[in-house]
Image (cartoon, rainbow, N blue to C red; front, side, top):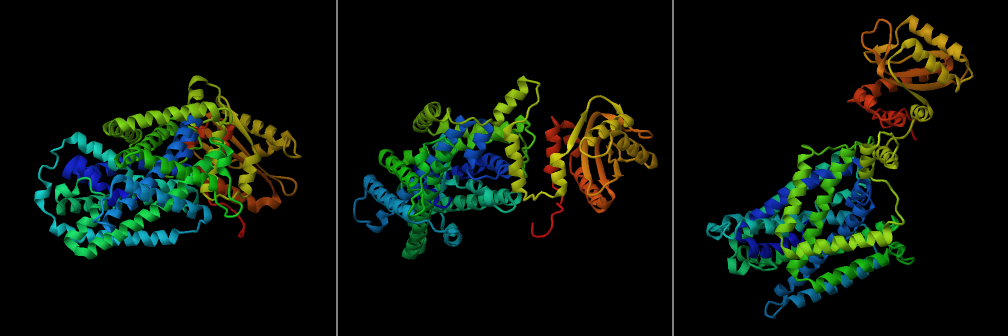
Length: 603
């Protein structure tokens, strides 16, 4: 996030909105909140590599997924191109006496792109710790700039704060929106995040708060210390502002910080952007050659070259301002689709959609985010609208020519439509995928109880029945799995119930019996929405866990009872049990339980 959006963009933003560009940065920070909340929810429900592309493809289908994947590729590429433009812009500080026009800046940026392309093809090294150090250094330098700059700002520079009109303020908010493009990128590596339910939302919210405050404070200082005629359109605003109140040392310090930001953003941007077409190629959305890896260097050289070629093309063909607008537009469209994805995932009521973080104020936050994103695109003018339309048209054409014939995954949107038009209950492949994702996310290692649940029979009884009838149905189901007659099992159930009721709390029963034999243990699950009538019980039983084991399994019998006790005490268990659409959904409730597993050490 800390790159050209801070070190280059304030001058262009001031040219459009005047002193109110400070407000535009704040508005952009507020407008990103709905998408941030939506993406945090999706990332904690589906912590898989791919980020927006994965969420949108699974929620809306391959066509929106194709558009989202391409938009993600282009937005990262454009943001990296903008960082390279920043490197070119600083040529004016290196050679202040030479006339540096836009084409000279672009030429330097293109040369930088070629250099970083070669580096990315030759080697990829882990730079996580280095990035942390660089970010800490950048924040420290900007903090010094803000602390020293605020006391010397001139109130007169803020006169006529919104003279250019609120329309320009919102248009400028759209322009600087690209500055917040990195805020939700952590979702792309959600699969590798420890405790994603806590760390992803916390990381996003803290980053949003810290960076928004830095943006607003830095923009305030720039406006307050620089003359309007020198600031408007300037591509090195922070460096020149630092030079005014910190002298040559400040100019050099902020310029060095800016170059560090540009270099790390451009280099890592090419690296990450090139992985988008590689991932889409593996999913069948782009040609297979884009996933080729260099046998010598181990890097996806074809994808890197394609990404860099796109970046060079847009830098050569678009003006600097239009390049920024197109980059912001792509990011805004992605955020719009992310908000739609949450509406669909929740609206589909697909059972195994289990986010660890839920966006508050649903669906109003998502609807507000969609409206704001559409408003920003319209306010930015003709170029973003034309670009968006052309991009969408090209994506749709590509989908029908290439993608449609090779992709058949069912999305949450299709599931929602089928459930609405047909009363037939069916199991979606997406449900199984979401279940597996949840198990991996929660680091669930299956224990013996899980294995018993996976293969056990489940009875879903219609109407209201007596306890005698339930025991008869249970004996019939279990006798087929055990070398014990149905009559003998029914007799044991009767004896156990006569000794003491197996209803442990209103609405819940755990009939458990001891049978002859060795190493025998079975589970049977029973649901009866209308309720099973037990003698002496005011409330009918709607959930029953039947446990049958031999005497040598007595210890495990107790552990299984404890597992059931933990499951039924989970929040909303009874509602989820009664609302489950079919027996597989009932099974999933137990398999996705957050109970502590009885797994031996080392497993």
